[in-house]
Every structure is written in structure tokens, then in C-alpha cells.
Amino acid sequence: MIERENRRQRTLLIVLVVICVLLVTVYSRESSDGIFHRLQRFSMDVVSPLQKGMGKVMSPVREGIGFLLDLGRARGERDRLKEEVKTLEERVHELEETKRENEMLREMISVKEANPGLEFLVVDVIGANPDAWEQTILIGAGYSDGLQEYMAVLSEDGSLVGRIILCTSQSSVVQLITDEDSAVGAKLQRNSEMGVLRGEGGSRVHLELLNQEADVQTGDAVVSSGLGGTCPAGIPIGVITEIGEKQADLSVGIIIQPRASMTRLDKVLVVMSPPPSTAPGMAEGGR
Amino acid sequence: MISAHRRLLFAIILLVFLLIQVGVATEISVGRVKPDILLVATICWALLEGPSRGALFGFFGGLLEDAFTTAVMGVGAFAKTILGYMGGELRQRIVSKSILWPVVIVFLGSILHELIKFATWALVGMEERPAFSFGVITGLAFYNAVLTVVVYPILARFSAGEERAMMF
Image (cartoon, rainbow over the protein chains, first blue to last red):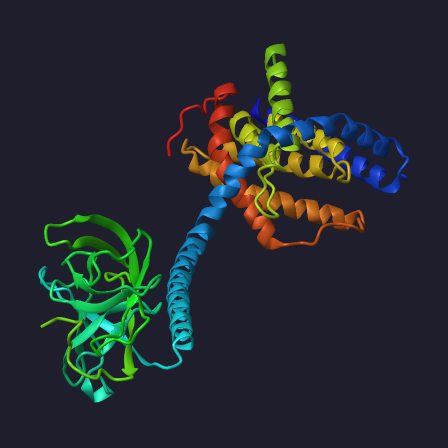
């Protein structure tokens, strides 16, 4: 029984193999117009729309497989890109810093060109006084660099920042014009009315005009008067933002918004020449 | 004697796997490796149903596949008939019901299948045959072996044999 079954199986195999061999032989001998070639072309015509449809249906599967295969590659690529992004971010940061510095130096050069009679030294700001009662900054140059007390200090755009009140060999302390003890000789740019600019300890300063009847308006520009010998004349200080009522002593509260941003100073210009002729004098006060 | 119901089932399974091979295999190919799902079904069917039905599955499946592609007609049928028969023969010699056996047999069978095809192409003097690459053949065999894990349990559900229980 089993033997007969085995024989039947072998016979079937032989028959199928013979058919295949005949088919292969005929197919490879016939021309491209032969019956099997034509049959094959017909079958392909029938099945091609199905293949097209399957292609669309299976594209998510294909993409999924592709995604899985790409995962390993993507991980390496991600790490490489992370490194690249980090490097580029550092580079961008450096370039931004360079650009900012460049702009600052440009401004400083224009300040120098606008004031041909003055000589400046560019100095880094290295610190600010943490004491809430003192409005001073520390700059990175001292008397070994030619600095001396009472020299005027300007911001990068040429506005008055303050004056040096203490010099060491490598650094100096600059009293800002906003300091309560600061007093600078100033005048209105529009009509040259003279006065003294005093700090209020905050971000503003006020102007005490010598002539109480002077014509003064909001928006008037205030510049240094040059009186007192510590600050050259014509240095921009700020604009009048508020004019108060006349007080009992006939003085008028004139509030000035300084042009220089005292909290964002990176570099300052120290006026080296002409040097301060005296300590703060008649028109200027101070420590 | 095979019942009409079994014949119908055989035809349906054959057509389904043929359609999958013709329509899907290209879509799930990995690089140059395109799985031969019909070969996987042939070997699995043979392992479940024996040499005669394995050989018949391989013959008709291979023949139809040849008809639907640009292959030399009869070569695929020949290779799959041989593999179907051999798979059925192995079924009678392997007692284990673990699915690892079909996986291994499909892996080795896939390599043999490609070797038979290349040998036949060479014998009939086919001029434009693909360049032989053992790397591609091994990749194909590996892909087919992986697909066996899915195909074999499906076919086992429709099998009349006693191979339904499987263990990993």
C-alpha cells in the first residue's frame, strides 16, 4: 500500500518534471511570436493592473519597512547631525558676537570721526558695583594705560556715561551720570541755556538750569557744557522727557533720559585728550 | 481520493499566494532581495500535505508565476515542483512540530531553488540571465525564512494533516 503510494508520488513527480522540461525546451526554442510567449504577454496584460493597484495599497507597508531599515542609519545620522548643529550653533554665536563687536567698533570709529579734537581709548567694562546706592562701573584700564581721575567716559555711541573717580594701575572706577553724587556741567543744545546735571540714583538724571526763566521744552537735547574742565563740551547726554512745575525756590524739575544705556555697557571710550584740567569745579559737583 | 472541497481550497490558497507574489513581493523587497512568497507557501504546503500535493502546488504555482512574468516559462514551475516534492518527503522524516524546522527548511530550500533556476537557465542557454550573486540568494533565503513564521501557521489552519500544533 505504502509502496504503491510512493510509486504514485514518484510517477507524478516525473510527469510534472517532464512537462516542465518540455515547456522550457519549447519556450526557449520558439520565436517571440510563439504560443507560449504570446500567452505570457497576455497574462502580463491581465495582471499588470493588479500589480499597479497592489503597488498603491502596499506603499505604506513598503514605507514602513523602509522606515525600519532606515532606523539604524538614522540613529547614526542623528548623532552626526547633533554634533554638527552644536558646532554650527557655536559658530553662529561666535559670528553674532563678532558682528555685535564689529558694529560697536564702527560706532566708536564714527564717534572719533565726529570729534576730531578728542582722543579716545577703548576700554572693556569688567564689572558693575553691586551696591544699590552707588552707580559705578569698573573698567579694565588704569593709570598704567594713561588714565587719570576725572577723565570723561563715553558709551560706544559717543554719549556721556560718567567720569573716572578712582584709578588703580590696571582698572578704574567710573561714576555714572545717574549716580546721586554725580554733577556734570550741561546745556540745552537748542539755545545753550546752561545748567548742572545731577544723578537721581535710578535710571534718570535731572537738570538744574541756571536761568529759571529759560525756554525749555520736552524733547530738547542736552549736551555737556564743558564747564568744570572734566568733560569736553558738546558731548550728547540725553533728552528732556519731563518738565515739572516751578518749586518754591523757583527751580523747575527737568527730567532727562540719558542716551547711553547704563546697564548694557560692554566697552566704553575714555577721553584721553584733552585731559581734565582740574577736579570738578564751579559748574560741577561730586565727591 | 481528494474531495472537491479540498481541491477548491487548494486552488484558492494557490491563487491567493500567487497574487501576493505577483502584486506584493516587489513592494516589500529590500534592496535587491525580493521575497519568494510563493516558494515559502510551496514548501510549507508540502511540509503539511506531503510530496504529491507539495509538488502539484509548486508546479501550478510556478507555472502561473512564469506566465505572469517575463521568466522562461517552465523554469519556475520546474524548480518549485522539485522543492515541493522534497519538502513533502522531508515531512515524513521530521517528527518535531517546532516551527523552527519549516524555517530552516525554507532557508535551505530557497538557496536550492535559486541554484536550480540558475542551472536550468544555463542549460537552456539563456543569454540574458541575471548575474549570479550568492549574497542576494542568501538574503532571499533569510527573508523567506522570516516569512515562514507567518505563512506556515496560516497554511497549517487549512491543512488536512496533523501538523497544526506548533512550538517555537
